[in-house]
Image 1 (tube, rainbow, N blue to C red):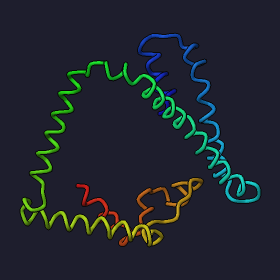
Image 2: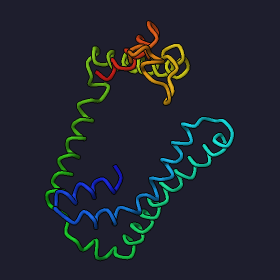
Image 3: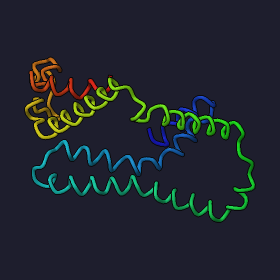
Image 4: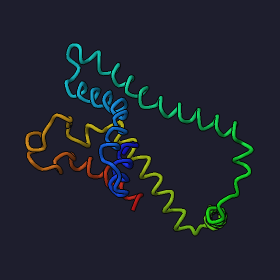
Length: 187
């Protein structure tokens, strides 16, 4: 969720004015509307004007979504430079500093204990097999996806395209094998 979601939730938790929260959340429409509009145009397909509008609206949506981020980064960096002395004078939070030290120590021990040279042969073999399974399944799914899955569009329905059974999306046996090869390394 964007900034409107936590604001809305906190408004309820803190028992603040609903109307003030709604009024304050109105500017979010500026970032939400272009994305929703672009999604609606995608559903219309590539016929006629929709084929032209689709990439334009998607590009516009990305620009509108990223602009506030870059503006915020600019002003945060500017404040960090302008108020550097004041920020440096602030004492560090001791709990956070202790937590960071513990995490750093844990990372160092993890690195030492999990060095390739220290791993047992069965663990090394397992790592290599899992890497091979992941690479092979990703390449196969990327190159031969149409041999693994039934074509399914956003506008399709499970009842019509897949005969009411979502598992019919996978073409057996190849699709099932590739999915198992992709999932096994994560288990």
